[in-house]
Length: 391
Image 1 (cartoon, rainbow, N blue to C red):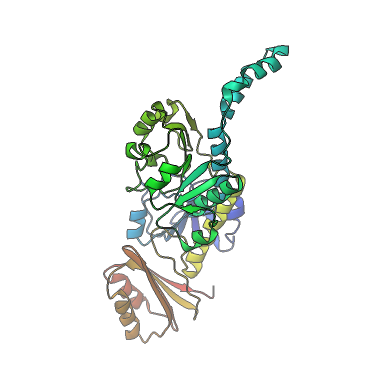
Image 2 (image 1 turned 135 degrees about the vertical axis):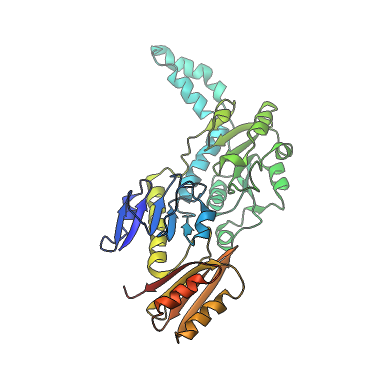
């Protein structure tokens, strides 16, 4: 029986994929095999020795102690793309809100309550105060062409915009999904110099923190509109405030408000609604559960942020799954231990990601407890499991 600790409310459509005869699920589960969560802050948690996997029903993992998990051989999964359509739709809404003063107009209309028969005349008299611009024919620059960035770019084309994109690390999958009409920018500088709108879709890392700063604002067109549905720290607030006062930025739309932004003019602050749809929550939960199950039951890894993707069709019923540091001769040491017990290896896969690696080894006969302990004692090995794939 596998034990799953649930740290947030998770869509039942996803949780129902855990077979009740094989899984125990709860918020207070002791010694869990896996944790599933959304935004719960677990960086200060003591990780139980039983823990094998953490599944984040969402893309970001800033609330998870990824390095600590890596050191303990705990695989951290996220669900990239599961909420992409939800985020894309709110980005498109953001583009329209930045272009037309719809929010100001709605607030004005609501202020007319009680004016009786004068309301229609007042509306006609003052509507010009909320005039804006059309987006058709304008240029949208998309920085970061992952799943969401590609969807935003393609949909903006459908709305009649010109689109330029920049992503030096674009994946093959994203490249296949990107419309041929999206122009490729040679650099961030060339993109922001030519864009009327800029949509940010990059993760928040040490390298991207404060990425949009005074230097970048100095290269932008006057009156640019910026959309940030990625992470708040990517834009330097102090430099943004100056750019707004100088007329460089006509509007900043963000899904990550803070007190400083809420006190700025020409900022539309949305309370982190990008992935807040019923469909996105179901998609993320479903993907997270499937990934956790594949790893716990079969040793397969997909969409891990700290260990490599690993998939090996089983060639026998017994499988060793070994999480270890990415160091030389690890496979040789493991094979030597198995050879001493006359354990025949029927199939094997070894893949690495950064400082860590995973070895999946299908064996024809059962290793002894001593052999498993010897592998575990090998320097660099952090987790060893023996799976019976017949179960």
